[in-house]
Image 1 (cartoon, rainbow, N blue to C red):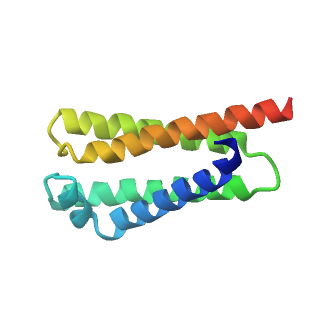
Image 2 (image 1 turned 90 degrees about the horizontal axis):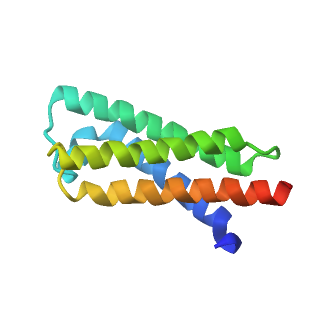
Image 3 (image 1 turned 60 degrees about the vertical axis):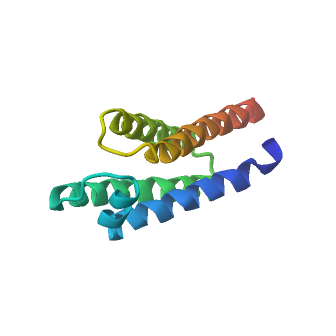
Length: 127
């Protein structure tokens, strides 16, 4: 995995930016896909969540391509992914989202774990 870690990080980050922008631009459509109730309020707040997803995806891309190590940024991007996993999973178990949303949650869990793995291997390389 070490050989492909940068490519994996870039793909996760791009997917995060694209999905975040999709939520911002078409919150009702995305809410419909994951089986959530679509109201003006839910659409508004889902668009806000999408904005932050897009920002964190962009931050991760910036951190990957930075000439200087960006360990704190990568750590916070990992926290965002793990927090998203927890929030979406909770939403599924409370009936806010359909079981289909667990695919999103699992993607975020795996992404967060990969980000933390990247922090570990870059720390080991610096030592």
